[in-house]
Picture 1: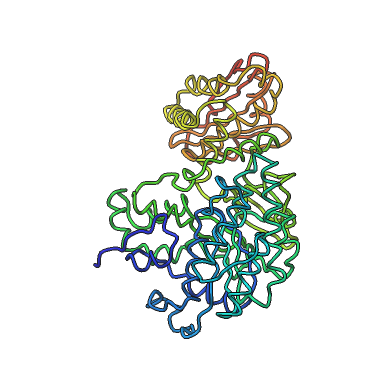
Picture 2: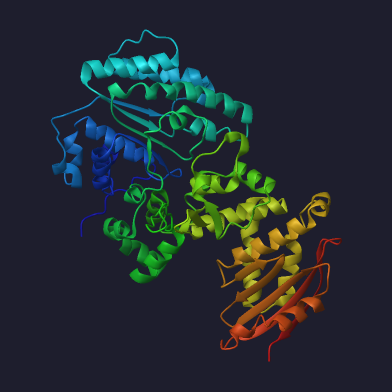
Amino acid sequence: MSKPLKLPIGLQDFNEVIGGGYLYVDKTQYIHRLLTSGKYYFLSRPRRFGKSLTLSTISYLYRGRSELFQGLWLEGQWDWGKTQPVVHISFSSIGYRTLGLEAAIAAELRSISQRMGIALQEQEIDRQFHELLRQLAQRDGKVVLLVDEYDKPLIDFLDDLPQAQANQQTLKIFYSVIKDSDAYLEFMLITGVSKFSKVSIFSDLNHLKDLTFDRHYAALVGYTQAELEQYFEPYMAEVEAYQGMGRPALLEKVRAWYNGYSWDGRTRVYNPFSILCFFSAGDFRNFWFETGTPTFLLKLLKEQHLYKLDNLEASERSFASYDIESLQAVPILFQTGYLTIKAKDGLGTYTLDYPNAEVREALLEYIISDLRHTQTPFSTPLVVDLYKAFAANDLERVIMLVKSIFKTIPSQIFIANAEHYYHSLIYLVFFYLGLYTESEVNTSDGRLDCVVKTPAHIYVIEFKLDKSAAAALRQIKDKGYAERYRADSREKVLVGVNFSSEAKTVEGWKAETLG
């Protein structure tokens, strides 16, 4: 067996990937379809998903670098004798934080023009941009315009609204040039994470095709299951040996941890960054999540009292575009990759959920820690300890741990938000517990039922707020919550727990084994 290629972790330049002997998952068939089917495109995908590599690939393609495409699908499908000038702008690397956005754009345009032998006479960024496109088109032919992370100057300042609004106006001026540059453009692809309104690129360019939900390009970036099994086959044996599991078990666990992203409700893909890091490390860890802490999202979730993120419903219109002045958590969670489409109906309604275990575990850690006012690493041991207590049938310790969940919440915050904190924290902790056991949590009309399954027991738990443990236990029996588990051979334990909002702790509990 030949030695596996190097894994291109963090690499975004197509020339470096191919020329450096790194693995490249061939996406050129999708790219060819894109280039031959239209002219103006926008693509929204989460960070670390391969958008930059896609733009880089297109750039080298139009520059006629045929040697980089040897052995790839596109090699025999392209006219390599024809080249086009390429203007490739990445907003993540132009230095807008230190220079300011307008100065950074001006510096980037000067750098591009100097590199391409164009002398710019204009002073304002919109006129410089138009001049660059016009001179290139007149001298070398129509321009291929590639804009990466167009919204980075907005995303980075969502917690600083005045600066975000100022950047938005600058972008509006810059992008307004494109509308009147049709005669100079051969092809255009703009990528980003979110689709914000009130930016000229979307309000003025009505011929810009949004690929975000297009089924034909659902796997343009990200790895499909077939691609994973084909391209990563040389890396499988080592990970199988390290993990001590066979191929079917390994593939199933990898799928649960890293697959699940979808933009059409059917095609499921892996996050490329997570997969590359996984096969490099051989361990199941939160690779993608660690590259960006969602502090602003946590603030938004808290403001909108939104913590139950599984099986949410959203309309198609809510994803079309939105304003930075009135941000809604659900569209942002979807576009940033913390939620994905699990299903959609024919009426334009989407069902959203966590894409996989990696995102679910990490985001729950952050949310629980934020609610408990503790540092993030402290949440995982709490849930692991809870799992161990259930596995040992140690209900005394289970109750002690449930009490500790609320221990660090400042009294003034809890008193003002008793119902909110009670339901949110209990729900999230037991939902998180489902990563380690078969926890089933359902909420309806403020009532919370919890079923925790371990190899030896099934615990049917009812929580009450300011009632009594006896009332909680009686409800389990009266409602027959345990009846559907009668056929299961495991021992059934009914647990009633009463929580006091005044004492901010468990006031009492009762347990009974089902006969």
